[in-house]
Image 1 (cartoon, rainbow, N blue to C red):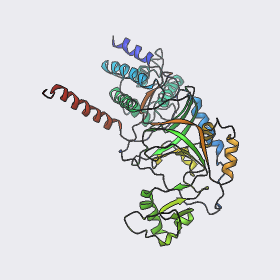
Image 2: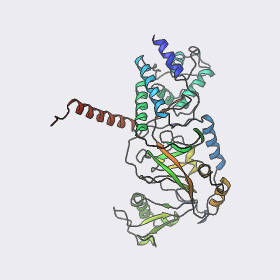
Image 3: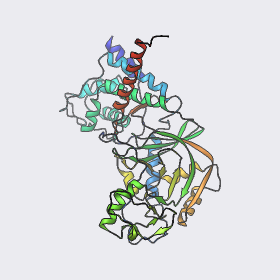
Image 4: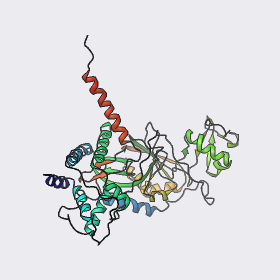
Length: 443
């Protein structure tokens, strides 16, 4: 009976390739501040007011194209909640029949070499549909390596086909833990109030990817850099209203109080080198030397960084009004998109190949093609482009989900929020159950 059940579950959970990204170690949760990381000092050769060309644009486009090619199914759509419910039921049945086997921590696997744990690994991968049921025995061959790649892809790991220490750890995560991730993701979706449109944008924070969805298919996918563990990006829904070219950056007061003040104490020329202006309460420029940067309180001034190659927001800002004051934007540090661990912002979402996203957002305004966007940026002048048709946007925190092609995905709970959510939900349920068991007396 157990063997039959496992085969049925494995068949039902069979998955197709999906996009991969290496997830990092979980970290503590924290309050969300609407900030951005301070940029490094601009190179001396950069001229004020000169917009930086689209550096390594072909590299960014290659990354985006590679991510898109692996799957056209959205992470989040109108059927997401029901699909997660289905997986919870399937995984619960699997747990009732013993789950999947644990691979020994000292297990060794080598391509073309028969190992003592090869069949155990095959059994583990068959149960979750990463390997066909008729491949239950044999040495570590190309077929098994492809199954390992499939598993790695579904879990946001580099698809090497080698059982790395991180892959082994992920293989041995108990099914009960996966069920908790699914339940937490389902709970979050139940709290979302998102109006899907014919076109919409989704940022899944744990996966560090953004998707542009049109007619229920992903037409663009981008790497993103989201909030650090101590400054996490929030979950939210909004509408994209404006695309701003060559934006200025108004530094949040919290950064002015801490990072800016610290820099100025060490180097009084910091603001000028970073092309930052100091403004009074009436938005008039003042001399930075007239400001007391030594106190513990935030100086009663505004710091604003000029447009240009040095700007922390890069060449494009995508505005989406929300209570967290966060948005999507370019960066002046494009090399960071090469990193697998992309939790490095102060809460906003930095988007790889963002000019491509801007062109897609403005596709209903024919005057704004990719070429005209590039030309406008090249002028170095700020230009605010109001979108004639607002595009819905959702930032979600899903550590587990299933797409329409029945691919089940898991990511690390980097912000350590799943357990907190489930505990809070359990406490709330216990409170109402207790209240129901002891109703107040009627008058």
